[in-house]
Length: 247
Ligand code: NDP
Image (cartoon, rainbow, N blue to C red):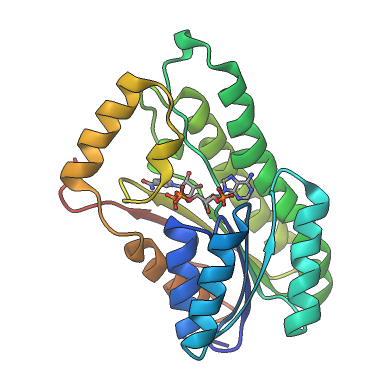
């Protein structure tokens, strides 16, 4: 089974990597079910996909709310009759030095980047386990592979999801449930992510980096498409995606 015909949920699909992935997968025949908080953006993207001959549905979804994640899964089942893939992609990056004590932003990153991923996993696990088939793709970051000043809490959430994905892969192999996991480690990708940074010095540094080396989210979408396209007995489970110009 290739991308064609697969039912794929994507969170954080109202912009950036999620939007690009939804559009590419739908173009290649997937039935995409997209969620995020901004309804107007979700509707626009869904309308564009359908106008282009693809299949898509959307629902306003805050990943921090378990029942909203469950409702998104229910929409996939009701509209498209099942579920093959979840792409846990929603995230924020209000980076700052730990000494600045932006504690509310720490909480928000843990709630969205970590608990949001757990809510996605919990919502799909009963289906994937019983049908003995399913793929969980999660957007970590290069900040989930190595440490960067300013990315203490952001990186902690991204290191955490790396561990989650690998443990699910190993447990699924032991339990014989055929659940495949894919972890993405993007570097500088030009999206709306930097808008979530409130610390002015951190924002200036990141703007300068992204303006000089950043690449299109379409680069990540192509990797997602490649992973979804793999046959059932192949688990391509980790990808770093760097701009060629980024050190
Ligand atoms: P964007 O800001 O463009 O996209 C983030 C998406 O997450 C938006 O669709 C946003 O939609 C959604 N989102 C935020 N909070 C919530 C929430 N509580 N519930 C549901 N959706 C939410 O940035 P990217 O596309 O870059 O980010 C996608 C992922 O990629 C993130 O996990 C990010 O950490 C990761 N990443 C990005 C990199 C980059 O350089 N851009 C590098 C490494 C990783 P809305 O506001 O409508 O809810």
